[in-house]
Length: 320
Image (tube, rainbow, N blue to C red):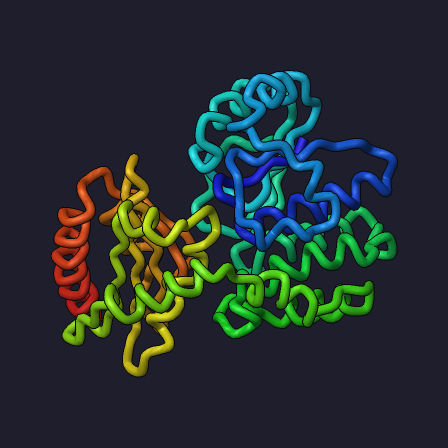
């Protein structure tokens, strides 16, 4: 069985389906289980139609976890990232294999390939296939899935997470048939009209610039999500717009998901987005790209964020 974190992005689903397609070539019939749904912009990936959604097929997926001999855990390093599935995977007698590039992994896996100096889990899945001596088996289907995750997790190869190994693997995937223009169009040139209008609304009406902290902030209410018919995946990438503004070093998106307030952090330079998220908002991630959450109201979360930003900048200044 192969699983990945809730609300999978291109790296999560791309690594899962890249590994799935490879194992099929090896004569193994794996199953991919996602803890939740995911954006329509990922549904072009080869064999995506075979992915099971735990929330929609809970009993079937629960049985599959219990019956599995081997469970691959991709693009997450703590079992809480797969929601209710976490304790089921923990209790399973199956060996667990973690393949991931995030900091501070939880000790739950039997085996693992963990490297924070890799662009993405997709890059690590390619490395796994190569370790098994099967790089020659990588075909267009596998290459397309893996390239998608590498491209998105590096923001088209511009983030600091783009290493020399990233370009070497990307070149190999192109040689195997991945078509970057088509993959880019599937992911980025595939917006609904409502999503495009929502982005315009957020930039025009909701964007706050906190000049004293070189920070851009967008807070979205649950009512606004309903007003623009926002579905899973539609807020993907919205946090990155703030970093396109001259002088901005930190961009933050806070979304009221009713049950909790989800937070995305993106930074430039030496601002540790992951440490900030971990310190104040029960989060974590990469140095310049992290996430967090809050159980407080949206208004209180916004207030807490602004206060935390002041405190944390004082802390950083003392360290300097």
